[in-house]
Image (cartoon, rainbow, N blue to C red; front, side, top):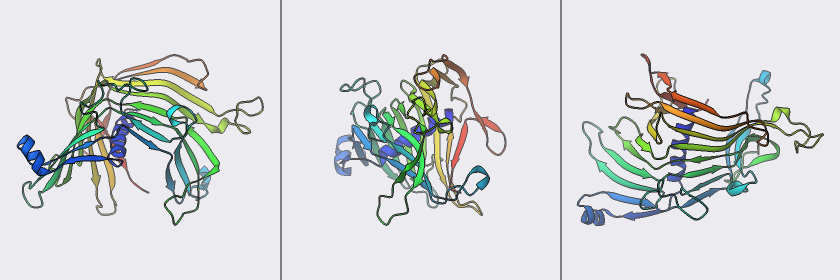
Amino acid sequence: MKMFTKLALVSSMAISANAMAMQSMDDAALSAATGQDGINIGIGISKIEIDKVLIHDNDGLTNTTLGGTSTAGAIVIQGNGTGLTATKGVVITAPMLNATTVDNTRALASHNLADLTIDTDAGTGTNGAFLNVAAAVSGLDIYIGEIGVSGSNAASTTVRRGNDTTNYNAILSGLTIKTGKMDANIQLGAAPQGAMIVLNTTMQGGLEIKNLGIVDSSTKTGNGDGTATNRAAGQIFLDSIKVSDASGANLTVNAAVSVVGKEDTNNGYLRIITGSGATTPKTDMYIKGVHLGSQAAASIGDVEVQGLQTYYFNGTANVQGSMITISGH
């Protein structure tokens, strides 16, 4: 779960950066205002909506013992019929106290989604030049609709491919992620900081994941509408998961994101190292309202985890933190 929460932070920042509306200040104006060359960019977005997200696996699963048919399938994020995600797969908003009021404890003073300061530097040595982007990122309310698996439609010559809606099973009922404001530094080129993206900051207010339902469709019968002859899919439902530093209210975010290129027979991958460094504190986690069977089932209680610490093998020894690698196969 700790790896998931860190990955969620990086993923949400990547989504935001690719959906920007920019207001920029040129070098001359910036130099006159601050005495330093460079470019400032304020991303003035208060809400992002995405109808549906599909990740297609074009050759499916080849292992017939596990039920594979080598037929293209897709992970689908779509509306779940409730609230902001009734018809939207993903909704990202400024941190809200309610429908109209911004939570200023999690928002940037500018009320932008992110404020970027961009500089280029010659660096040192051969091919040492790099681009540096210092980013202050607002807290976010990220609403994710239902996540399911489906058959993919045939590959299309147009942009929109879609999925076979008659062949679909939900696997997550949806969730809400609430993050606090944080800082990140991005370097492209030589990256003397040691990684493309470095997060070394404190997320004010910690991290909260709400309304997470894990769906088991293997127990569903008929159309699964929950009537006497049509048993609904089973579900493990969690009211909320709150994550913070041990004995603290905020969450230390320490992560390095790198894209590793081809080396010998390895064609490369995305690598995320989190929680490294002797100063990174342990993590506390509180899971509220564990419901087994359905959201309507009585809660079996709450689960509290104190002082969580993960380790990974760095090639020499087990060290504090975690390492996630993502690649094709």
